[in-house]
Image 1: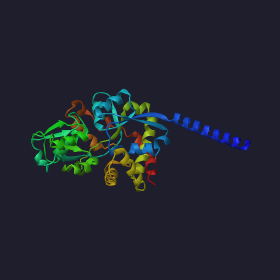
Image 2: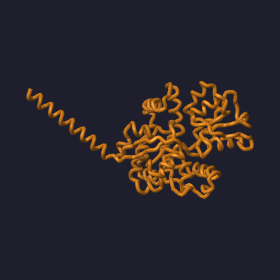
Image 3: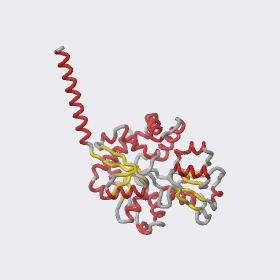
Image 4: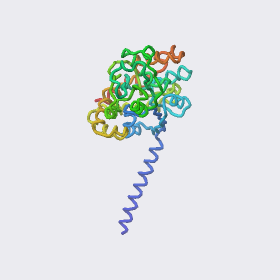
Length: 337
């Protein structure tokens, strides 16, 4: 009995030490508020960095803060409500033009990750002339700019062809608008392709195949944070680079399918496989330097609505110094050996 009690006390003491060590380790992790302004597969590096433990390994405790739209995201960034955000470079350009430098520090998708789809009965782009086409909003949203640029590249000038772009809400609302006939077409993330097929909504164009140099779903922060919180930001970027390498490793495909299915509420293994294929083909970069040509193209489009943006250059709205440091040190290449 005495031996049993002694052994029990030793076990309890070991457990107590383990709990205290774990609590102490967590308390040493640096808290980071990470804003997210959208929800689609392009958040995979964030999900993996959290679930696989890359953030913890880099000594940061990331709290995800969901934000409704890029405008609010930029406001929270500037006010200090978030340290970094998954957002579009459009926010960097508008904020910097307004006098508060916000920079793209980790590139996202270097093209337009959208499909142009029509309402049932609309079978080609020419049938959009004189019709209403939906985007998420009327401001400088990623979907609206994608529509404007994409349609022009496809030979349709919305103004000349009397195509009216209307605010039609987020993607579920836009899909409902197509089904009801409220809009004749819209842009949709490819993750919705299976649902669109089920509803009989035809694909009119895949903007990813047009080779339009662009950028969406980037990591952004303020220029001030790059000075005052540089160590924290580097830790975050290290974790995300590790996540990108994990995603691009074919050996991790099964784990990725599970994560994508859970995070995006996908209904079938076929849906998950399609999203995974898009993810590794279009969205995840080994060396995510901001896309110079893509950023310059976005500045030119934003300047049409925000005249002060016309004087901005790529260097004004990007800061690749951390990526460059980790690249030159061999850190990134080491992730793929």
